[in-house]
Length: 243
Image (cartoon, rainbow, N blue to C red; front, side, top):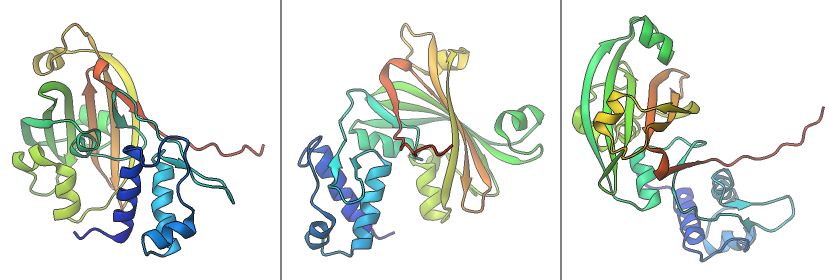
């Protein structure tokens, strides 16, 4: 899929902020200046700026300049607010990564799985278990269920590379919404078997249900993270309460 002008402008501004061409608390050029710099329409510039606002890179108020509020965090960051694959997060953070598929098999949702995942009893699912390696350490255990009718013809090779890349670029599925929660749990036998926990006996767990553009839940995911290596970041915008 060819990269759009919006994508290029967003990526360039994001890179310049991350590499401190535009440092923390400095100002970006104005919208008018950006339209000239990128030979682009104001609409495209505003779309790129809106994406940077959502991701916590800049802040702007009506009639004011565009201030950079991005500061790198020492720990690796997995975002709660966005929908991002492991591969995308690894590349964004600049570390080496690998995936080992422990198993991928078709199952039928029983009452226990349906209660846990919000799929229906009798739904045909892909049950996927993957170990995620960061800088050659086994630090994340990803447990996923995908609806077979949506994630058609899923294979271990696809699961090792990127399921989201396959869904979006091969099957042309639009991934829209994720409902997530984060908890902590004691490590179970499966965690101890597959992850390098060292002296840790608990994990940070991010679980969620993911929906496509038709409003169909096609995935339930549970990512089990060793706690010392990760922090989770989100960006929130305060809306004035008019009670």
